[in-house]
Image 1: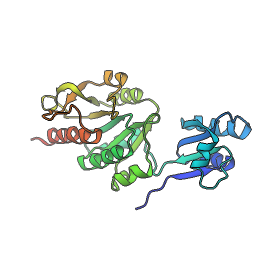
Image 2: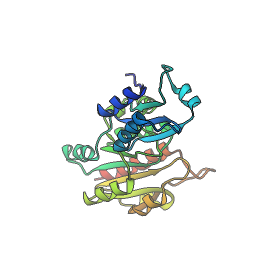
Image 3: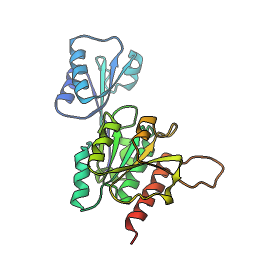
Image 4: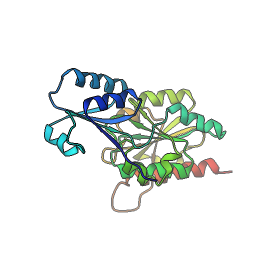
Length: 247
């Protein structure tokens, strides 16, 4: 299956993209341009909490496929996002305790794609990503997921901490990947669980980590002190699988 981001250029076309309900992952606007149509576009972008980047004309010219961008270019997602309720519904339909993967600022599309693929194989009911400072469902992510993006719901939220607090009301406990945490084998990760994986460089942010109930470390025997985010997610996800399937 081919996956393509939808690039929309020109003021009227971008306005229609927003009003038709398309999910716009990123909006590029000519720096300093504040006329009526552009302000209308920015209002629509605010309703979606779209990531807006103000750029120079040269950058827009580089991105443009038509040469007629009129100061605005919108990138729409390659796949549709789910709602968090859809993830909980998927768990209920399988009569299983929810297993959700929360990603705090993953920026590499290949990491996100690999995590979606692993989540599908590990039986996770869905993934939650932040709307800002993180990669979205780009074509590269969809391709790297090897089709898993069509089966594992991915939801976006403007605030991970608020989403976690709501999920706690549904009975979820959160375990955070942290190399200074408790050995994963010594933690009880059965029941409704949220696995939190952090950014490739900085790890899980302080606020998100403070809202986790446990921190889990992966035993390491090598000469470097960390794993790739998607690999760490896979190791911890399958420890959760092991604990959930123990007799």
